[in-house]
Length: 468
Ligand code: BGP
Image (cartoon, helix red, strand yellow):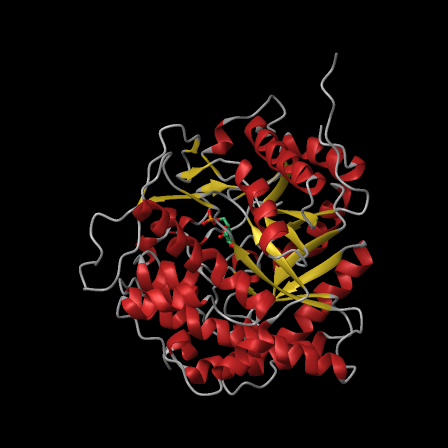
């Protein structure tokens, strides 16, 4: 007998996520100011794969009309993008009319194409002039972000229904301040936590501004505010020691619970704060902060899911700077890897996330806000018509959607799924190395779009809600 195919609820939405800095291009046109990606590209282009810097995105500002039609043709009803702070406001925090006009035009064209737009306000794109004033280490920048959100809510409040304060607020602390991967490439656990704390305040001020603008009628009455983070369900060895479980508690505490508590309870997890304090990490807490954080409760959540985290007790409890080190990586011998990206493929993690929410945050509605697979040298696998042949992409999405379907059946309040990068786009310092799209972007042919083989499968699933 043929195996029963799983299905997704009828009102479950399927769309795609993208971001302003990775797609728009025109980095210095229309009054757009430099952000850290532009600055890093200018300072050291060698840090970017094939020396492709931030400047071009995937040419979305030139191609958005055809891209929107393509999204719709492929069966999607909505997509997420982000407003670039460095495009919307000038250095004095005033509206840049050309930047505002672009986003109005994009939202108008999206509605015309029959697509709902989910708008995120910050996607790792710190304006450089604010970085020079301290970036997320500075309260002044937290205030500047709050002002930016207020301008955005009031400018686009009648057009947009789904708003998000941040994409993956855990990533800048880690990549820029802790792991030394992204500009300014620091290795400082304490400064990373300051950044994390300030982003939490910024998020909460943003939510407060949203509520105020909505109460005044400047934002649609049916609009919702959310946050998007990359959640990494955290596992350790079989038969773990107490110390291994402790490593899980703190790793998941910093990456996952910190944000889940903030957005559902308006407070940060006390056990995590206590452990940071014991480890000598001083957060820049001021009187009145608890009241600010209390305003951070959202209407729903986006979960970006790519891979789990596996940890074990650390060999040493301090790093080379004397700061606390809570966990070492655990290499699971059975892990299936996406070798191009170095990320484990583990669909069950999404099911576990759903069950964790159902148990510990039972009121919280959420959706999968990013999920996808980026593959290197994909252009080499083509059929006679020149189409990229990418069965692994179908396998990846199918297995993750199946995990979602099972989670929903078991009580998860998961409302939809956005694939990361329907159309290939610029991936930070990896540039165009790993391709995520169901649609290829040909860099040798004016960023031309060409659906890959997997696109047919996506359309079937998106329109039938049956996981083929
Ligand atoms: C997420 C980001 C996206 C996107 C994606 C893929 O962390 O929100 O911006 O880039 O990951 O990762 P990468 O581009 O690093 O391969």
